[in-house]
Image 1 (tube, rainbow, N blue to C red):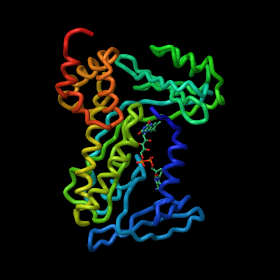
Image 2: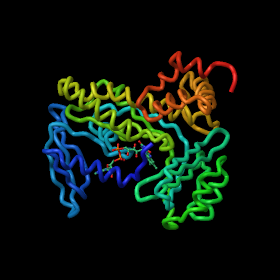
Image 3: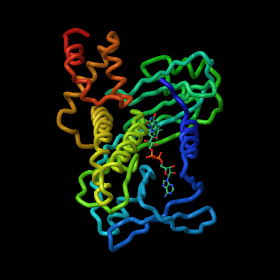
Image 4: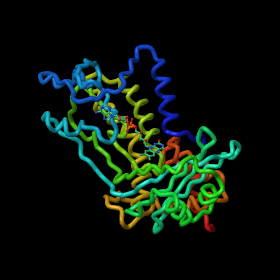
Amino acid sequence: MYSASRPLIELNVRRFVSEIEGIDIRSHCQFVDYVFDEGSSSVTGVIIRGENGEATELTADLVVDATGRASRTPKWLDEHGFQSPTVEEVHVDVAYSTTLVRRPWDDRRAIITTPDPPRTRGGSAFPVEGDRWLVNIHGMLGDHPPTDRDGFEEFASSLPIPHLTEILTEHEWISEEIEYYPFPSHRRHYYEELDEFPDRLVVLGDAIASYNPIFGQGMSVAALEALQLHHSLANAPHETLALDFFARAETAVDPAWMVATGSDLRFDGTEGEKPRGTDLSNWYLSRLLRKAHTDSSLVEAFIGVVTMEKPPSSLFRPSIAWRVLTPGD
Ligand SMILES: Cc1cc2nc3c(=O)[nH]c(=O)nc-3n(C[C@H](O)[C@H](O)[C@H](O)COP(=O)(O)OP(=O)(O)OC[C@H]3O[C@@H](n4cnc5c(N)ncnc54)[C@H](O)[C@@H]3O)c2cc1C
């Protein structure tokens, strides 16, 4: 798999986007409010505030809220007499500690071990640009990782594989700096269930749903939603654009939500509603993973779902199911 640090991904996205004709990037400014035409129930622009604190109004044919998990659209809808979406949360109380370690240029191993009940700890090392490994340790349900070097190494040594300890002790740390990132809950806004929505406004990405980062799905879901927005813009009239888009976006959100929350709900301490069939699909999935150790077709099928190139239902195809369900380990 190809791995890169978030700054490198964002730099490249920014470069590509800035080269598209007609796109104007305004840096260092904050979105503060929507401009709203009361009469037509339509968003007609946004108010932004620049570094100097001055507010400016930008008019727009379409406003896309991509402000992430902290999106203020639900509150704004409420304040303007619209129904706001139902919110579902699955509390996992996970936290990440991450550091960078020097990597021999030809060692491109990616190491991942995820929490598995009752073990609440996991870790990973991804080969990223600049001949470095991005080494991460994480713990769920309050079992948070430390942010000092000794504690980091000790936590890594408690994982069921030795590889992270090897990387941390046999290779030079780029710095002693350890980034800490807490993530309390998966959170989903059910925009697709709304009967009405302001005209000329849509919401996408983490602002619709954000998932435990262990599963690495957020960017893929956001990209799939952007593609669905493209289809909505091509097909739906502007009065129903948002509802058309939310219905399409659900096809990207649902599988990611099912995989991520379903897996985390295997832990007794996770707080959230367990959809029907979760226990059975988790049993099936853990059997599939065990068998994948000796069956490359199962590895391929699983990676296809994890990378969101295939829907989770593809794991239940007869050609996969018989490999999973035949007796033996
Ligand atoms: C530790 C961690 C690891 C992850 N790893 C992966 C991974 O490996 N693969 C993957 O696919 N996903 C991963 N994700 C998830 C991924 O980062 C998110 O799903 C993705 O960034 C969502 O994109 P977004 O544009 O919707 O929101 P964001 O990336 O959160 O972007 C929102 C932007 O809006 C800006 N903003 C917010 N409010 C305002 C405002 N009022 N005015 C102006 N700007 C504003 C914010 O500053 C931010 O830049 C990870 C997340 C975390 C936390």
